[in-house]
Image (cartoon, rainbow, N blue to C red; front, side, top):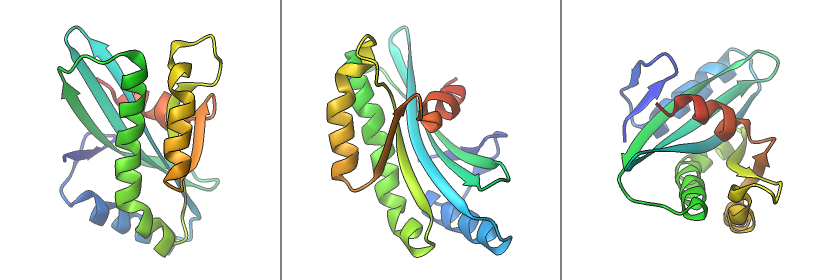
Length: 157
């Protein structure tokens, strides 16, 4: 799985090592961290592109993120695509959660799903929320899910 920084520089370490290195660096600088993980997708013709982000927030001092992009030609319904986004976020959150516990870093999983029932993505809200909370993770949906709806949205080419 290839990850990169926002400026495009590749992350050469395995993602777990890169995240631990980043947490140590930021904690050593005295920053209090929070991590938000989210995925967004866009359909372009026959392809669906997913962007998953790990957003590191330094309390009162901005933040930075790691990005992973992935394309598929699998056709999805809107509900299925929303749940695949959530699954991708949970996969990385689960891989990293022991680091967040070890370094006492708060973590949230953000879903690009609208809480307003007038939007099609809302069809997946109940399942997504159950999935995320059932895994033991804190959950945010639109309009509070900035990792998926803003950060990952910008990372989908």
